[in-house]
Length: 419
Image (tube, rainbow, N blue to C red; front, side):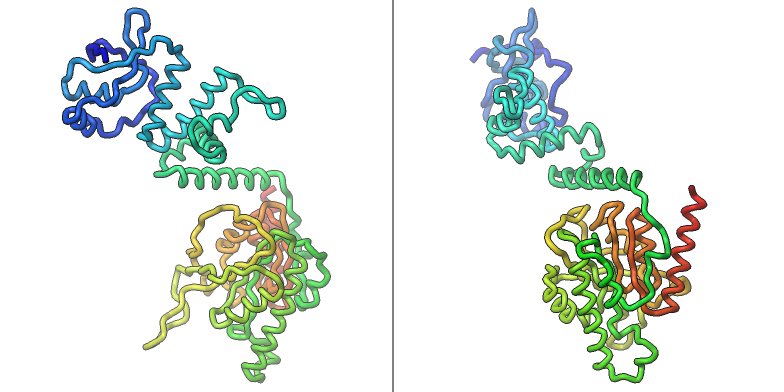
């Protein structure tokens, strides 16, 4: 194998590799075992130009070795030389993930320049399938890596991620936010008190069309925190049976009005988990048996005792009809959001709109319809309006209904003033 002087080898200014790794470690290996693979060079005029093997060349410079074994490939044109450089590094798998996806994109681009791009339905030319085959991997993986490489140019912040998988998840979140934002810009929703009905949800929900709702988000009264005044003299078991019967009837209507491939979130007390799961599954909902947890910050919950812990969380049952992906994938099932300050509460179990907005944005798109059969103070409806979703709610208690109407009117007024 011929040798040339290290000083005579010219390194082109535009090289693909950015991270050369531990040159010192490679230098030790070369010093101990010698150069196992010659570098590839070609003659360009009077110069000898490097094609591939820059790390090995730099290791020789570090060691002070004046000559290096080379393999001449004068037959390579500019595109082919670039192809050899990239493919050698890919085969050795010593790129970081950012360089790897960029290398695949450039290989695909080079091949298309050399052979033309394939035209679907007409054959001929170079395709993603050809790139995948040349790399010895699946078309799906290659396609995803090419898209990620293109995304790196548009969203440089993706380079901060430690792995391709993390970067891809972040890219998907960016796309989802953009789609949602674009829809929010063009979608208009009707903010009107007519979206809230005063009445019994077991009756009023029957008036909704089947498969007309995109999300059910509700906090039913389980007969523990809230009891109707005229029922206070009942035995607890009778009241609990009555409340569960109401929830059973409402869940039937929720399944009926919910579109295919849609979600439902139900807040519940842990003591009622088995009852609620049983009810929902009988209505043909698919149920995630491990609940979501709302971790409440900002103050403390009911005071604990000598052997009682103060509770600072609430459970949320996630149910679904068909299959619809969450808008942001891989999110934690523990959601940390401050509680509503006691002095600001209209309803004793009022949920913060920040939490409700998060759930709504996870399961719907702007313009879709959010339904709350137990609307309470109307926080779910307000959260829906804030995220450019339509809303429908029902509330039996006259006082809470009136307070919710005031909330909606205030929100409507703020919107009109902002126009």
